Image (cartoon, rainbow, N blue to C red):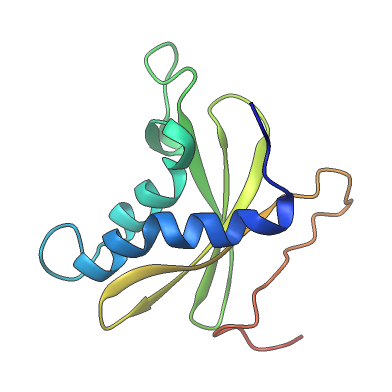
Length: 126
């Protein structure tokens, strides 16, 4: 199986989610839960919801999210496999079409303390 370069991951994610965001799965504005599910289920993962609400054994092997920080209108979520380490970031913002993913980035697991790679969209600098 061939792996994509890390630099292409945000583009692949954006292209995969574009139809969901534009259509707004429910026919109306996309909810926060729908946006998180869409971002977390990339690559065939099953979304279990907020990590603190997952339960073993029924949620083992699924993907969960955790709100890490808010900066202006943008929320930074950690994404990872339940009962394991986080692997990437999802950045969401609420707009006229509901909640949308504005960026995604791999998590730098070597950084200490954790450094949030804030996207330039919507987030103030600093």
